[in-house]
Amino acid sequence: MEEKGERKGFFDPFKEKREKMVKEQLIRRGIHDERVLNAMRKVPRHLFVPPDLIEEAYNDYPLPIGYGQTISQPYMVALMTEALEIKENDKVLEIGTGSGYQTAILAELCKEVYTIERILPLLERAKEILRKLGYKNIHFRAGDGTLGWPENKPYDAIIVTAGAPKIPQPLLDQLAEGGRLVIPIGDRFSQELIKVTKLEGEFIRENLGGCRFVDLIGIHGWKE
Image (cartoon, rainbow, N blue to C red; front, side, top):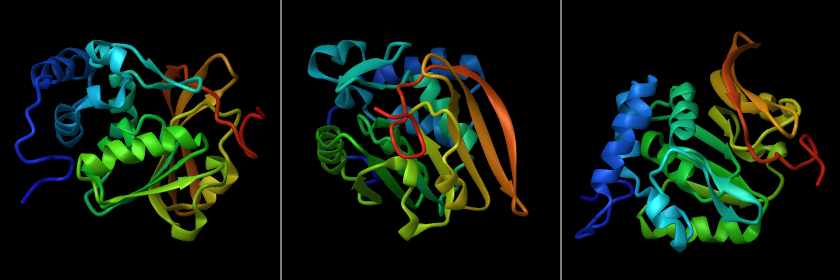
């Protein structure tokens, strides 16, 4: 039986680059969750970048994917994923499908991923790649991610892969008790990565450090 994200007979010439990425960019910087590290070792990041950037796929920086969007630096993907503390039976909401790479990492770790993207061509491209890789636990929606996906709430973990002026209230409303939300908060030039944990109805905030993301566009985010 194939594991999530694997294809029979699929030769991967980038396996060594992935291992080097994990050792030099993630472990050395303090990422220690073995499930996250194994997911980063497994998911073929080079398939999620534009063809002319394939040789740069495992380098230590974000890359453009079109429409003013980027695929995040590997370390930032690992940092945000580790902060979510995802368990195997968790239901995860992702705001900003983008390339689909972060989506694949989440899908390796949880039971179900619900992902929203406002730019339709990006969503369709990510959907095609993820389906070719064999993922069956990902649900896609086109639309305003700041509204969340209320039909399937509550979520054990919510990740926002774009910078917002504040935490969208609908996302807090859709977070399960004990749930974790990770989101970049700040202005349009720099943000702080914030983790929110819902405990007994209260939202506990933790600052994970500075970051820089594209804008979160929507009713509860930035205006275009």
